[in-house]
Length: 480
Image (cartoon, rainbow, N blue to C red; front, side, top):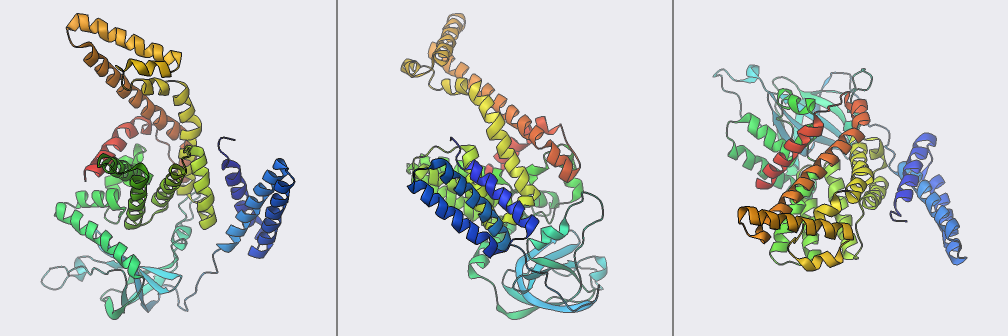
């Protein structure tokens, strides 16, 4: 089988759904997994490959149920407070202050696994008599603080199909939202808390934010957009700035995603190879940089998935294996679901894998069976020896292109080889544009149903808008 990891991934997904449906315990899923693995070993010893593969697939299914049981969230922590009651909260800052127009926001860990998102509103009423607003309080990761705040449980809107805000916060272990009482101040307590390693990561992130603010002083639009594009900080973004991106189906370009990792990896890999570093060493350094960027940008699931997939690509290259997109996606999906099976119902996870599936299962075969080989055949067009190692159709295409170049030589007087190189370059550019158009169309069509389900809109202008917006934004990111 060309993609041997697809079936284990499918059975693992089925096991996760079974675990959610029937509520198996870890023990109830562990002993069938061990039994199926033992049967697989016996089947291998008795030279029965079909029974061995069946037992391994069933072991994947029961392992999925066990992973779901292992990661099943505990009961929600409780606070002995009345709704909207003002209480004194004290704890460790685990997400530094994020500034947006009119408010400051940070995440406070009251106890391990119990966090509150605290908001401090800043408006003209809080300014002193002189009319000058107070200097915003920049809290950093690891500071211990105390604050009087009005606390409540987050809740979803009752509209059908609306965003599940409660689950989104629960995945971050945030179970309360708190608003600082008017006239109260955040008191910084002595001592440090948290992880030194995470403190270093957040220090890098804060340095990046400060650098962006220094590059665009006073320009709130530029600061907000660049912080969202480069490090995933969307606190400063205003809805009016992003509405046109939503309408044209290109809002994903403003969100930290795997494309950022692709640009970083491609640029760094090119520079390292240009400096003479070996392929394996260059890919290893690039993978380390991808994980560092994932951490600095907030370790969002799309970026973590992209960094993990690139690491699997590194492993495949190290063992001299050809990386197949579907097999790579399935392999990473197995690791990812064993690590966090609750992500299976997350829209980001589903859209990411549907995009990869659309490209690998639809776009890639079309490209490989049509114009993809022709684009590859345009390389080194003036090297006649390459024709001998190509399929007859591709060799004939190269010969006809050189004949066209020779005809243009007699007409214009330019060098035949130069004309052939220009024609080959123009054709490669045409085939590249055709490839991007096909991939954009396949992804947009493949994601139309989930986009309508989750976001209640389908933008057909995304078929063409992405061809312009995404390359320009990625060039800008690489330049920055």
